[in-house]
Image (cartoon, rainbow, N blue to C red; front, side, top):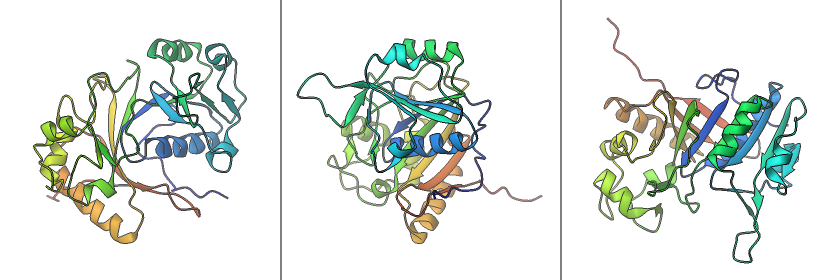
Length: 269
């Protein structure tokens, strides 16, 4: 039996229909977690991508997926889903050099069409790639976000924050270094993280003006990590990043998930 945190305080399951995840260090895991939560609430959920996404594992998330659509994707995805269901949609690779474990995405126009059909309660979108590294900066052509996104989740991996930065564990190193001002061997300070959150071409690049921004630090798998990550967020919060919610999470444990919102403390008057 899956166990979940008690609250989705950072998202409105009814009003927030279109939710996208960008960044690195756990986008797919975060969206799978959200899909499961929303399914438990009785929602019809579509999980897809505008870039590429891993095909659900039959022994993991895949056992909770009601429809996996890989062929005739646009027509099949436009068919009415069942109640309390998860649909995963993406194009299966057609060339030998494509990763057979990944599905290719729908373009924003197709997703906008699915939104207009109003047959899904929530559409969850993985909007960029990270080569499974814990930190990244976006390339020129990413993230790919539909204009109607209401929530953007910017994901960063704690395993990248807690060690010296270098090109080997950061995707798009040149862009990342340019935004944060860090050189190889430096540590990701709260000030540098603030720059990544705030920069026009940083973690929330291309976010619609009215979209709510959620910063998630994933991979906080131990009690010590959770304390340190919370302290790190609290320090970044003093610099007033342009985000609405800050979260820490772990989607690794077999006995359940961990997710908690870190709320900035305000001085009492």
